[in-house]
Image (cartoon, rainbow over all chains, first blue to last red; front, side, top):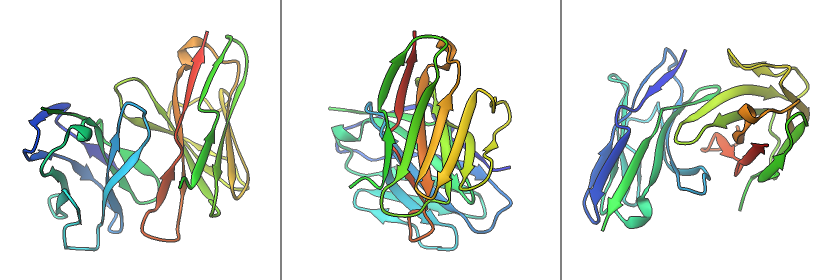
Length: 111
Length: 116
């Protein structure tokens, strides 16, 4: 069974600073996707960034980047130049057939 | 624009009634859809996997007679909460599997269910 672990229930960062959210996962699959989703108070699931397991290059989307370590089954999210609008719950997710989520990290960006 | 439409977004009803939530894929055929439940300040928990034309697969601990899932067409899955009670109050989110491109799953905007 696939499991996703986020060990940081809450984090905070000063505006314009950089923060890294951690995620580890466990699977016996070789082909899968990894995602970071943002969930603001509206509870809409917003895709932040995705990584295909077969790609060695770390994904980057503007201020968001990941550090994907396949052998270590680690998938951390780095947010650079943090903005107040980044305040939200962040979920790490794994999908091969179905999608499993980590427990989430509540990120607060402070002015 | 949204590729998965979930309706209703918010429903309040009396204890004992049944509530149906719809999940539609708008511009692609979704042979597989998923239903999640989310309690306040918690993560999304997979309830069941809905496959078009066949019975849903329920996660351990989810009552199939309480949460009826129907996936009668390639674009529509429904979740019916039968004889709802206050403990069924929660946020329910559907998603649809998309095999076309780089984003394998699209989420609906969720349904806030409140049972009085």
